[in-house]
Length: 96
Figure 1 (cartoon, rainbow, N blue to C red):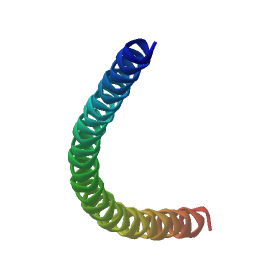
Figure 2: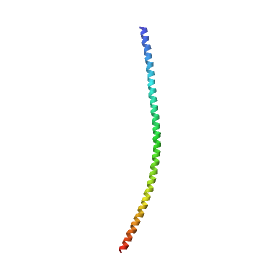
Figure 3: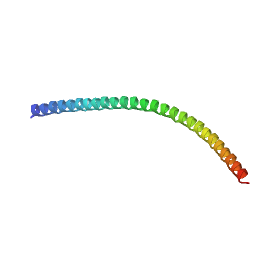
Figure 4: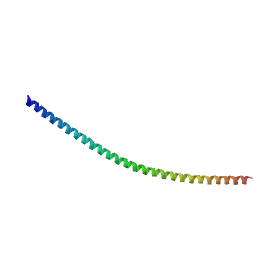
């Protein structure tokens, strides 16, 4: 009976050791997978940050160009309005 208990104790010890080794292997694999995921996310975040900076510069440039265009259009509209007033004044003078 004593030999049987010793045998059971040895088997239980081996089972425990195999369980711990399996647990550590599983944790190591999960940590490795998590590290790879974190590296990919950091790369994506860095890429997105660069794209956002570029997009911000483009938006700023577009705002400047739009402001220039609006000021040019306002100037042209002012010139057209004054020309129409001149034409109107000339037409009223001719009618008189």
